[in-house]
Length: 129
Image (cartoon, rainbow, N blue to C red; front, side, top):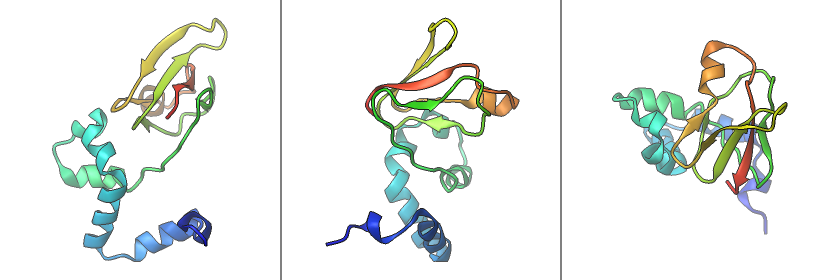
């Protein structure tokens, strides 16, 4: 018996989503990201639901395990991260000094992304995500 992950590649999923009617597409996105939307401080800052759905359509789900790096210091800043579950710690690699810790509903990576600079610290998972 095959599961859905073995039937479709990620590109196939994007193609299928593009072919769905708008109403059904919104239902699929809500089913997939509804809990994240309701718990995300970043998304709750927007009063306009159209803006939220524009952002949600750009989301790419990532799953990391304890000790995994989300990104490393001095990498190009190309993503903002919304945390659904788990704890992420940002630290400097030179001093191993912890800068920030983020948990469910919080977001990180925005400062470097919006200012177009390289990552100022490394981000890794301190509790399973």
